[in-house]
Length: 259
Image 1 (cartoon, rainbow, N blue to C red):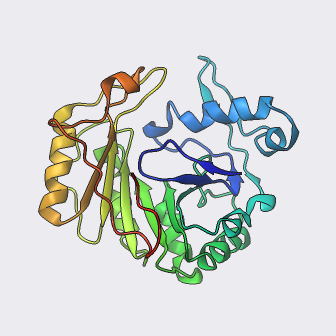
Image 2 (cartoon, helix red, strand yellow):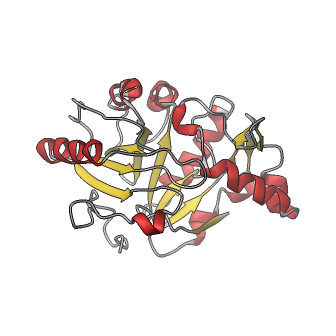
């Protein structure tokens, strides 16, 4: 289903796919896996959508189990929203997961192509799959494409992302698990940075955040600081050097901007 979102850099979420598979250290304490377990326990239509997608690891942590459930019933939901919104696509999955059929990805893109009143933010940890399929997809200006880069080990995802002809290409450096010196930000329009939150949250150093901010400003890339994170993220807040940083690329004409 598509719902209003408390995520600071978007306005709504839309999940035409449920389920994922951990691929890198940023997945260790995935909030979506915790939520998937709760949604499955709800039963009914929602429970069936998330059935089998998550499980408990040996240490008790919720983790995605590798099962992917496509949800065609949710495909047309953005069409029902007349007023334009900024929409995070697949907050509970990865549209470019290996198990999502190419034909289904094209159906998702068709909806996005035909809803110009919205801006769709697609985020993946598998930019190589997105890049391989990019030429067969229609990248209307309302589709933003991003990839997650949680540490220096995964900066090659940035290079792959630049191969995709989206109007806006963005990075999600969340959870930020280490410094990212020397980011190649040419062709990257936006960077989101945030610390990990919830049980088992790993710490983030302020200097890591400041360095990314300064690199963004030097490159002309918009910088958005989401949160410091921690077990009590509301207590740590989202101010960096005495202020919030809510920069973002221009959304569609007539669309509501983030508050």
